[in-house]
Length: 246
Ligand SMILES: C[S@@+](CC[C@H](N)C(=O)[O-])C[C@H]1O[C@@H](n2cnc3c(N)ncnc32)[C@H](O)[C@@H]1O
Image 1 (tube, rainbow, N blue to C red):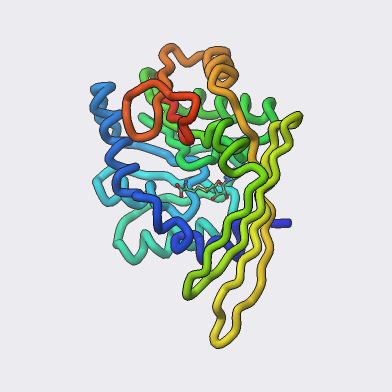
Image 2: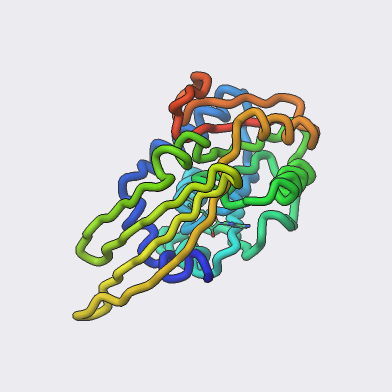
């Protein structure tokens, strides 16, 4: 089943609780911490462009990459409304091919968890490393092992909103470290609610194994943080950020 198709058109409503302004400010705080002023940036798995468009609005040259055409359609419509130029590319990030070398590459809000095969994750990291300029930064986050196994895993969430309601059933397989996220959406279309189903699969990675892979790819400096601050991740951190310098 295709992910992020019907979901693309209600994604922003369902992400209303996420403070993308704060997330964008955090990325800029990372630039400051590393004393860099990037100009050319790509966001991998950019979705509906919430971070990409914000950074473009703040003057960065942005490329957004995603595998889901519908997410990119929403992202580019939003860029058009904001009167900003963003290059949106429909690509699988395991076969990354960007037109230029970049100062910074981002992958924000679980893009890495969607790469469920370790060999493919290594390919993503290699692709990023190849497309970065010397000293360039790769900044990404993951939903932590703790979040996928304890908070989402084997729990059901539901929300009843005006334009969309959803039931979100999650199953965590400890052995495979896979979280199946089964989403049933009821989207208002005129006077009726139409039912859509999407299955997403995410992999729970441990910090250590990610750092080992990043080192193998050749990043010379790697730091990890609890989301939105510069403290070390805790056992119960739900989102962990990685900052890697080429
Ligand atoms: C949770 S969304 C995050 C979107 C956006 N970064 C944000 O912050 O809202 C995850 C995105 O990853 C994309 N994705 C998953 N696997 C991918 C792959 N192999 N290549 C490119 N994009 C992928 C999905 O299409 C989806 O848009």
